Length: 373
Image 1 (cartoon, rainbow, N blue to C red):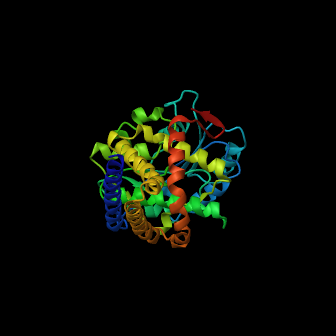
Image 2: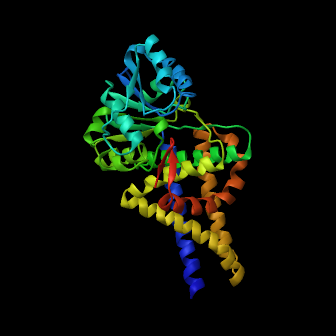
Image 3: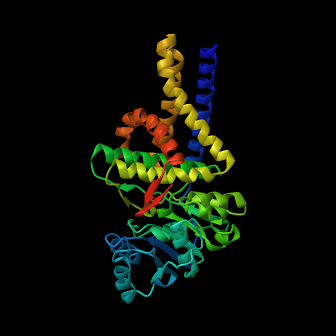
């Protein structure tokens, strides 16, 4: 009886997983380049805490944007840094009128430090469109102009791709492939009219849309989620469309993590926002987790029962679905070089997520020299 129930459940979950990835594939096929015209006023918000080493390079990239200088501003928000971040930014403000330094206020708007910094920046900004990036990122010259092209009249938010600046080590390649996988899911969901996630280091939204949904709202108390939770809020409001940029000149490289411990800590922070997702997305996440657990358990169950064909078939269907979506996404995001690492990633991905997701829910993490639980 147990084997009958287990294997039938495994088959049902495999079908559901594959159908989900088929929808993601359809969404990827629907993504188009933006064609909005004009040069609306843009405010680039850069929250920075103890980024003395990185903020100068980021600002050099932002002042070199191929967008009219009088049509955009860069607002760096110094989030109580203990190093020379403000001093570095101050040198730029002396020479560039469109660079502004803002200090976070004593009275927080929300309990999340990064969201509070973003809100401080928005309060001091003037743009019709708000773009956000991180201090350790290097936006390419066409970033602002490329993102603006997606803001057609009824578009409220635009998500972008942010690959890691990595070396040639196996660890760095696997991390980059995982980041690509999350971007593919995010892009595909937007392509079919949904909203799952995005990254704050390459994100934009209309000030009007932000105000209409009440900013970060109740999710402002969630430490992480200044990106995906806001994307979901704008989507649920229903009045605004979403887009995902596939312009290569909008892809923002970011510095890679220095080791596995830092990487796991970052993933715990990112996944922790999932507890504040909508019920439908939490159910979806739970089903994926349960499916991964079931397909991993299918190996010892098959050894005990002697019935190998069902687990092998389910593994084959999962592999085909994964490869189908990754191939399409890697082409869209110019990341075909990572495909050689896909077989190893397929083996490691399931146990990795089965461990990290519970840690994100129950464990603490560190972020910018601050500890959270």
